[in-house]
Length: 510
Image 1 (tube, rainbow, N blue to C red):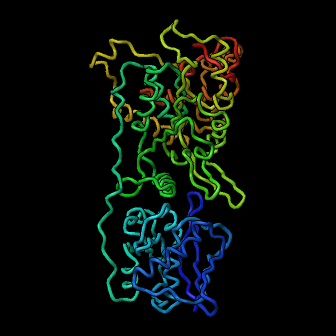
Image 2 (tube, rainbow, N blue to C red):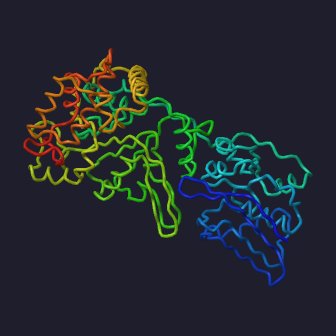
């Protein structure tokens, strides 16, 4: 007898429909699986056999053939266990075939018959349209985010068999306890001093600009970066769904309600590999850190300590907002529209107070040359950060504005930009700049002077205009024309490189 059961598999952050066909017929007792299963998927044979036995059902002493159709994509992981087990039960006549029509099944089987969660329940459920889905009980909230039909949570294979045979009602389950609440946002008022860096953080949030903080250890670079998500508005519905799919596919715990509503913050260590950062893998294509930061902030601390090849892999997704990952057997396109914030010391010794640096100019040049010019040029804002004074640290009244006050201005500036041009200022193309960010005659003179003196490249010219547009939007009375005042402020938020060096050379004066 042949049984056909609906399920899905995961590739990158997307789910793909899979029809699990099970044939139980004559021949020597055996189990064969075809349809491009990977090693973990082939191991379903032993898990399904033990789960059926633990649930009081016999394993057929016949030839069993399982086909995972269509064979276009490699099937990975253990999420097809439940569908294979149901297919075997239907092919044996234990469960009527009519009971699985209009149902999809996702879940891993334990040897005791328990049904366990797997990474990627949300994207897998999302592709099974016009069907009710049977999922592990602990994945019910995650499944509800993307399901188009009714979600049927179950804990044990025995419960499922009884429900499919009509002998018991579908089980009710309590909401899982492992979903985590949204972490409280860190407040900007905790930062002592640093008026220039605080202002740069506000500008970065309002315009979606990438930000580089350069300063000695203890100057508050990490403290500032971790407060950027608290200045950003909640994610739109479409971006929230994309972020949720990525987090689900990666097995990251989802917040209450199952939907990622707040801007994510990811901070990979500087020893991370290229695969860990951009995604991929040898056996399955999984999202990397840049995809987990989709819609939020990717913070790279100690930027100059990252391998140069790893950093250069960020250049394409920074421009495109997605990353294409290809391997010999499959390829996937993963979302990766994030805001990059990075921090670095000015030299190997860390710099410190004026006159304390022990590094010579060539050492500083070699250290910062680990950051390629094309990547460095993608930072709209490059801000020097100094250690706060003792009085600032000890004075409890030195705290600045709270995140809520700054976030209010950020939200207003973003609304102005979106209503005017449909996007944040950092995404404006060169042609759009003349339309939405025209320069006043005096502002154009300032820019010409900078370029004639060799302190600004063509790409830097456009980035200064985008930042100046954001500064204008943040003002109390945003104008259509960008003034010289905003251009000068934008130039001040782009740390000067070593005197005499062209702007694309990644060398900074300490």
